[in-house]
Image: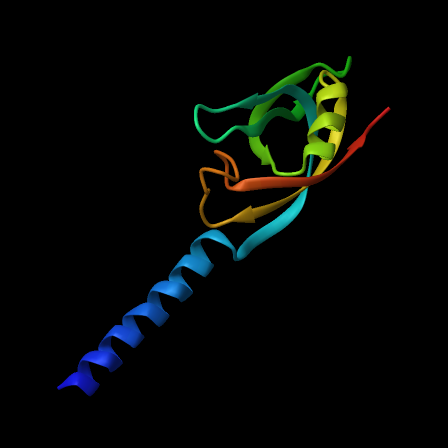
Length: 121
């Protein structure tokens, strides 16, 4: 009886550990996004995180005015990168991101984590 209980508890802990890893640490996708860095802030009540917002223009007019766009919300965990993003607000940038399956409250609000940025001139 004790052996069966031990096996069941061990199995539950292993399954729970695999699920937590898959949900919060596993990289679901990664890639690049280009757009206008519209907003970047440091916010939160208990856990302060760096949060950003980019405008991704998909269709432009002859005068390079965005006609159709969508927003890309992201979080940043590196304070040096956050300072760099803070200084280039309002500019066109290319960011590299990794997408996790879930967001952790101390990592940021978004499942998209930006880990590098390049300003487009």
